[in-house]
Every structure is written in structure tokens, then in C-alpha cells.
Length: 333
Image (cartoon, rainbow, N blue to C red):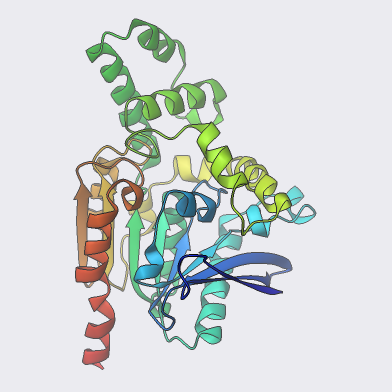
């Protein structure tokens, strides 16, 4: 099934919504375009298990100025939530295979030899694995909020919120932070997760530099006109499922060990104030990675989402550095 939406103030802008059956599960995608036949970008959302499309649209992200952008809701969330299959959980192996099949669907439908793959947060974990397995499908890998060793990143985040509370003499915050137990099983500790989320957002190291409350997230998802009511609800169900199924994977793995080499150009775009996936760990992943070409960019006024916090600079990098990869490849041929 396919639906086509046209923006009220952008007559050339289209958003095509489609469901593709992959490995027994109908999975939803939305492909946004302003002027068709630009290079395709596959956007891999974070979470694990929380769609990017409603948030990006609510916060004015316009990647479609530079790409034909595919927002895919990964298995088990949003447009791709299937009540029967989710009882079994979701695995990394399933998501890697799903990503490859979605990529090939896009290549075939839109007659493209390759696409760009952008992984944000959890999506950077998934995207790195996919790019390692099938580099020939992609012009380049773009990591934003890049995961490295998440346990080490969490240690930094804990020290950041505690030190910031001390610097501000925020006695109430100090007490709350010190009262939660932090260890290698942090991903199973709901009390720690709540405190960590509260104070990274409060101190400018969370999703956005200025903070992003759960109420705003709720509002933005439930105001997404291209999602059905059921899909809006399933976005939150998917976030629970995603963490239950994959939280331990993200929390315990060291991506620098899992992905020591990528055989395609690599771009890492990281907020300096990101305490969900820290700059230190993103830089370590980058420095240890072997690739034919790689470049890292830091955003001085961004937290976890530089494509929201500093859109102008983000788009400039796309125009000047990332998109020319296509021209270089054509010239090389």
C-alpha cells in the first residue's frame, strides 16, 4: 500500500508512505522529496525502537533539500509494529537483514545504484554493521551521535551530571544523582535511567542542547499527520520493546571492536555536548576505524542531535563534503 502527501506551502514537496513486507513483517517507510532524483538517503533512527520521522518533522529538519530521504521505522516500532511478531522480540541480526532489504527495495524502486546511509544514535550501531557487511550498496556511511563503547559513554554521562550539579551547587540534584546506583548493569536500572535522562536534559547534554521533554516528544509524535493514531501509539510501544530486546546489546558492545574497518567513505558528525553518546567515544571509534576516507566534525553548540541544534552547519557539511562523494565516484568510473 502506498500513499502520497503534498505539503501545503511546498508544492514540489512530496512524502510517499509505503509498506514493504520484509521477512514476514510489513514495515513502513516514508520517502520525502522536493526535487526528485537527488541521491537517496536512508535514515536509521535511534532508540533503539523510536522513529525519527515525527520528531524530525516537528523540529524542522529538512534533509529533503539535499536528498530524497527515506525514513524507515525499524521492525517493532511505529509503522513497522506487528503485535504478533513482537512477542518474540527483535534481534540485531533481523535488523541488519531488514536494513539490507530496505536498501535494495529503494535501489530497485528508484533506480539507484547506491544510497547514503545515516545512522543516528542506536542507528549508528546498526548502520555501522550494515555498512561493514554490504559496503557496495552505499556511497558513504554517516554517523551522528555515533556509538562507541556505551558503558564508557555512560560513565562520562554520570560524571558529567554529577560534576555539573556540584558546580552549580544544586544540592537537591547532587543528592538525587548520588542516590542512584550506577554499574555495568545500568541499562537494567530504571531509577538510574530516569535520573540520567532528567539531568542530561536539564544540563544541556541530552537529545537537544536546550533540552527536550517527554511531553514535547509526546506532542510531536501525536501531531504527526502522516502517521495513523495506531502508529503513533506503536511508536511508544516500540520504544519499550526496543530497549527490552536490544538495550543490553547497545550497553555492552564496543563498536570499535565490532567494526574495525569500513570499505567506504565515513563521516562522523558529533555534538560536543552529547552525553547520550559522548564525543570521546565517537572520536575513539573514528580514530580506530580503518576506511578509504574518513572525517569527523564536531558541533560546538550541539548535544545529541546536531541536525536539529545546528542545522545550518549540518547542511553545509552535506553540501560541501558529503554530496561530492557521488561526483567523485562517477568521475573515478
